[in-house]
Amino acid sequence: MLRNMSIIAEDESLLKRAAKYLRKLVAEKLADPTEMTREEFFARVEKARRQPGKEFANVEELDRYIRSL
Image (cartoon, rainbow, N blue to C red; front, side, top):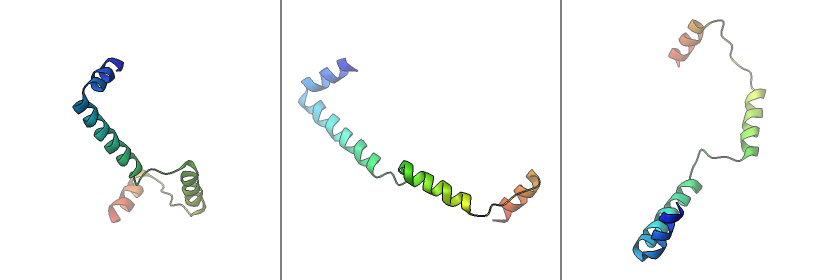
């Protein structure tokens, strides 16, 4: 990896392409709508725990419920 980085550092066009790609990666990471903080995650878990759940006696009952949605 270090060897590749030194090759890129010596070539200005490669360095520009690498910088552009890294900016794109950072933008994708920041724009991820599924990413949440630890606090947000546990708040969602707690909210779900307080809601009444649905229980099924067997797999067939669960299957019928899912197919009805």
